[in-house]
Structure formats: C-alpha cells, structure tokens
Length: 146
Image (cartoon, rainbow, N blue to C red):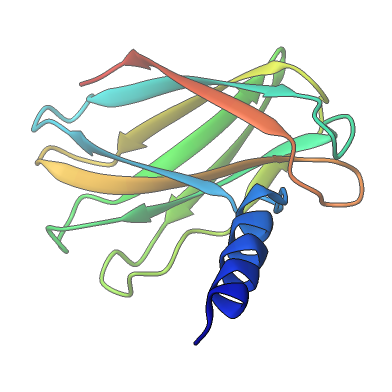
C-alpha cells in the first residue's frame, strides 16, 4: 500500500470517530448486602442535547449471580409519580419489563431492592430519550449503597 492510500484510510477512520453516534442505553451494576431491607438508590438527571429535549427516562433491571432467591425489583420515581419493575426469573438472564416516567428534563430517583435476605447483584439499564426515541444526556449519581 502506498502512502497516499494509508493516509486516506487513516483520515476516513479518524473522521468516523469524530462523527457523533447515538448512544445506547447505559448500564450500571451493583450489589445488595444480606439484610432483607438493603436498597441502593440513584439520582439520574436527564438533560437536553443535540438530539432534543428529554421526554422520558426508561429503566429495566436484571438479577445477576447468585441465581437464587431473592428477586430484584426497581422503582422509578419523579415527584409524586412512581412505577415498579421486577425481574421475576433471575435464572433467565433477561432484563425485567422496561418502565418509564415521562417527566422531561428532570432528576429522577431509582431504587433497587429485593424480596428477602441474602446477598444479590444486579444490572440497571437506563436511558433518557426524546419523544422520537433519540437518546439525550443522562447523569447518574449513587445516593445510597446497601
């Protein structure tokens, strides 16, 4: 390959890296301690970006190892509104049904908890999106880690 072709390939590659791509949903993993009342809590702040204004925050959760009781649930809260989702089969490695709150650019609270005593781990999938389903900015802060 001559220098001209190498230069063109390098330029094309670097250009492709600088082109903004829609972001996929973000994932965060965590663990709950043995106490049956253990709860992890997060604030997720949705904000506008080049894709537009946030319409809603969507979340789902999956129960990770160990693949035994207890069952993991997540609550999505914003103001006086709250919705819940549960990974009712922690052995299938599939996320719970997706839930959402349509409160626009806002700070949302997410709580992760379980049904009984025992150490358990989880993965939280979250994404702020526009009315057209395009991703907007999401910032997450851990509030409580139990």
